[in-house]
Image (cartoon, rainbow, N blue to C red; front, side, top):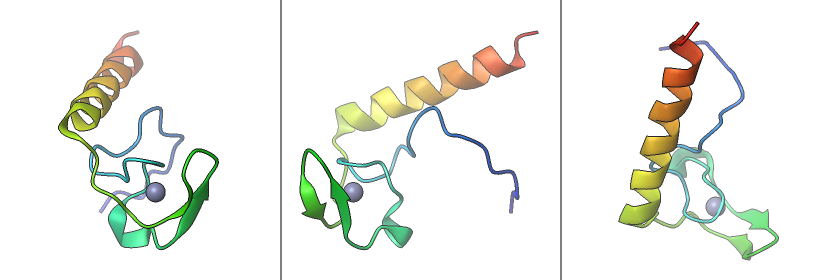
Length: 64
Ligand SMILES: [Zn+2]
């Protein structure tokens, strides 16, 4: 288990479609666009975009 905590440039690919929070610690959350909401599955498009953003961020960090 990694103890590294850093600012995430992209949400978890499986995070809530509205706020990006992981399901297991979502609960009920408030976002301006949706108001109070429960975790909702992201769309495939969102997942792909998040995974791409993550790998792009990783590539940038590893480049000197
Ligand atoms: Zn949410």
